[in-house]
Image: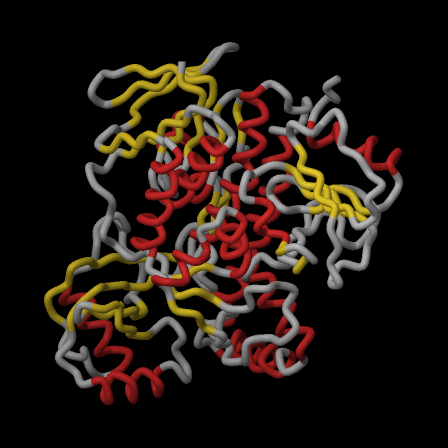
Length: 475
């Protein structure tokens, strides 16, 4: 029997499979497409995702193939500088096409031993007390202990489970194309700068190989949004908004996206779970979608692996939904707000002007960007120290740095006292005695996803918390 079947081979699914395999779990990824997509749906990684890559030793490879940006405009396109004093060692956005992100994560996952089967479409599933049966389009039946649907906003897994997907339908539609242009760079820059003074859902940026990513507001909402726009439709809307179509030609991809916001009512039904776009969809404002899915995977991976290994506390797997559902709900809210702020109507424009003034305050600017980049996420672990529930940034130590010690995906006790112990949990928690001038607490217990589970210096307090996240004491 397979330990975990992951349906969907995008960044969320592959990251999850890698997290499982890192901990010895047999993970199989099924993807209905015969080959990876060449479509660039997302263009970058935010701070928290960069931290996760660093915790797995992947960051340098991503940095080699991406471009660092410390620029503003990530919240509703409001042009303010990148905030100072962000709580991170990676204070930038990494511009990197989704296709490259998928390739790097796939190389990492397969290097760990993850199996990816392409051209394998899920058409049915059932579950019982022992596991899940997955039925594929070619008649194959596979048996696994758990199954995770990371198969996108139109998730087959979610539909087969009968999980509701409430929210708001698309009211505003935008056209998107990867095309070649005949316009000069000077003309493109001048027109774009002028139009974007009032219309933020418009733009053109180079993708390499002579192609540009062109975005323009649609004329209404299509009856069937699965049907891509034609090149003529894109040209017509470019002219309507900017007075020119830039000579667009030779499209390699045309699509439309809306502002629908929906979230799965449940992230878990028995032995089947949902992650990424299968659990939540929202407008692409702020570039949060791909990042949110990767972060879902990072939260779920160690918990599901613990369940498979047999040491997970009773409610550990359920804490995935308890922690990640509110995070996604917050993303839905901030994308709704951003879409309103990008409207050309007088009311939203007046609110936009007010918020633009407020973002001149450094604290406001930083708060909003930390929300977009997921640095501000804090899980509810109850009352206590202000670090509790937050992820800890990469702090320098006397003998290296924190994130270098987290490559194995285990819990970690960073002990500046040298008096504490994780005896009984040493197979699941690393004990590091070291000192950081940037950490002003005696010791912190970090979960495998880097979030702070305990702060203090009292052994009894530590011993009381360890079972909550790392199961029963052994020995």
